[in-house]
Length: 87
Image 1 (cartoon, rainbow, N blue to C red):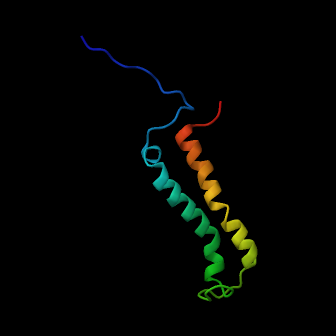
Image 2 (cartoon, rainbow, N blue to C red):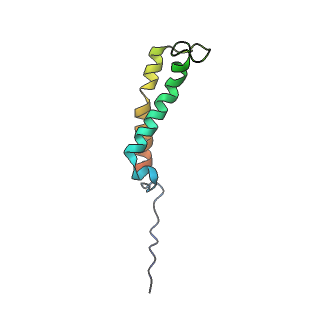
Image 3 (cartoon, rainbow, N blue to C red):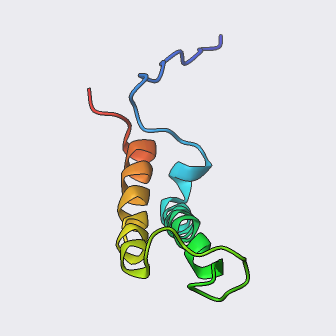
């Protein structure tokens, strides 16, 4: 006789995927990617390293403020992935 475990996972329950199994590694990757996604246009512009031919439309100070929100946004993303959405 066999038994089948049909316990369905609630839609808002924590997930057991790759991101949920390695939350610190993926938090670091997401935080780094989001931060540099914002900062890279400034760094490559004439105001930064000068590798591209345009001037940055926002200054360096504003870029740094926006740059600092990458880790916070990554924390919200990873929390929603690992803990699920609030009911």
